[in-house]
Amino acid sequence: MTRTHRWAATAFTCLALTGISAGPALASAPADGSAPATDAAFLRASHQGNLTEIAAGKDAQKNATTDCVKHVGKVLVRDHTKLDAATRALADKQGVDLPVAPSKEQQETLADIMSKAGTKAYDAAWLTAQAAAHEKTLARIDHQVAHGKNAEVTAAAKAARPVVAMHLDMVRGGKCHAAAAPRAIHAGNGGQVATSLAADVPVALAVPAVALGGVLVAGGAFWAASRMRRHDNR
Image (tube, rainbow, N blue to C red; front, side, top):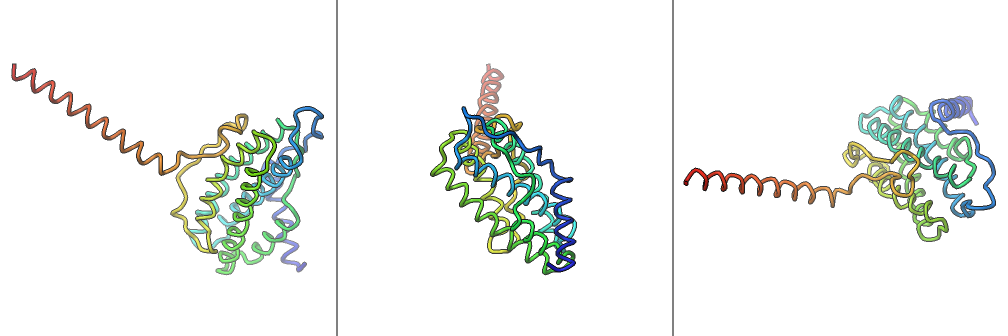
């Protein structure tokens, strides 16, 4: 590893362990009520993925050369911070110990990107890495949904999927599409992971709901005006 890469790896480790609350390692899973191996592995991988995305997002806000990439980085920090709070709460509940840092591969990937800081090559490498990472995350989520044994962990995976899919839309093909990001997501308080991990109301539901609300309001106003008109004619 070059001197630049060694510096970047050290900077990443500091960023991940000081700027992100990974939480202390938990005790070994209890004999009763613990998550099966598949579910525990999913929680651990999700935690490492969240740590990586938070660190990558923070670094992009500092070192990207385009506003689009900086904005996507901000969205990743926002969303993965909420997702990780929920992941850690669920892991605690299930008695699953979590790693305290991203995997070696994740650290090396980000270190390589950080070595390009402040150049156009940084943005391109960052977007390419994010596209690949979110594709892997979606595949891991789908595997959990299909093969998970623990209902709460599987429900959490289902709830996280639309957020991760939205992130992929923002970086798909290694191109920046910042407009794909909503203004906010909701991830519960970390204690109700299975039902409120991370999900906005889908646009497909939100738009009709707003339209229906407008129709009801307009209808109510029309009815009130008709009543007033009949009263005046008396």
